[in-house]
Length: 526
View 1 (cartoon, helix red, strand yellow):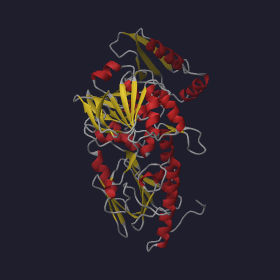
View 2 (cartoon, rainbow, N blue to C red):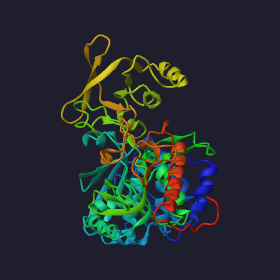
View 3 (cartoon, rainbow, N blue to C red):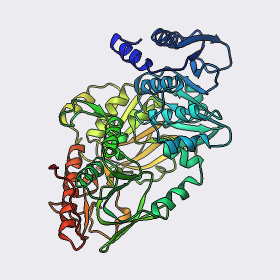
View 4 (cartoon, rainbow, N blue to C red):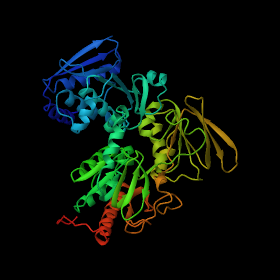
């Protein structure tokens, strides 16, 4: 299963293993079991420290396999073949079970060790989901560190009966001791915050004691990361407060237009951004949502946790989120058939009928991708024509299991109380109300700026975007903005990075010209 190049890479990683690893495979007579067995044999042959044992009828999911340090019971299991996005999860699990130290802060590891109680996590994933690996890797790490924690990764496409029985319609979906724990991307710190109920209060108290920043960046996406780097390079006291570091890039599948990088994936780029920021003296405060901005000579940013931060200048880079349809039934059936990530959740709808709302590039790309998985795709576009690139439209119209409906206004999502069973739409030319029976709806109608918390404080456009001038200055002195949250056209990663850098340089210029000047410590040009 592994090509020569991948085998060589994995062999080099496994040389870092210091403890013997036991792989126990639970198999049956299926093709997938044979495929898994072949993969595990290839892995075991790459290191003398790995032992492979086979079992049949042992009561575990088949095919699945556990990873353990010899003489221990670490509670890590993969139910499914962890290839695709999950191959990295397998490699990290092998290294950590084999004694290689994890890349996590000492206080985070101590927090994991101190968790009391018995925890059985089950994470349902799809191999095409770019949000799933972070959850899987975080819970695997916790199982390595704390013997009271167990974790099973379950490929939803392989264990469809479980997916249907538990009515799972979005990935990742995590169960804890049989009860739903969470859905969507979650990092290690976020999972710990949900388990350790006192963590949020301790973090809020710590934040409240911080000194005034010269520049505080609100948001951790490409614009916020760039602003932080440019600010830190000026040698001034810099902080970043973000609801989730990486922002919407974490939800982006393929990136092929980031100049000088032929292709990459959103989570990889987000990790690189965070690593770059942390090479400088930047105070990063993650999992913190801003709730209010208080202008003044010293600007205050209030947080939802109850804490607040103060700074001499601020860069707002809170980005945007997926726009919702705002029709009856959408919120009720979110993650019960209504989805926003076709790459993540598409495999759960294998053989079913779905709809895509939106005829721009995102919507048409989603319909093309889904057509290879589901039974049928209905694409609904509000306008009288599709707005996607011509090459995408040609591909879409070549697919036999796709129907395009133009001039259609979605009016309602319908369901049986547990999951979606259809949608209603109005033909805008005739006014006729129609219904489409289906089991999934993927919403792809653009972005909405994250500015609700700023209304009445900074000037916003009629679309809710922060109005900025050529220097990134907002209507409030000392407050700058950058990225998808602003009126700057073309919401692209490379543009957001440039705007973040510009906003930080403008903020620094504001500081040295204001009544509270700062001394530039850097001598190398930025």
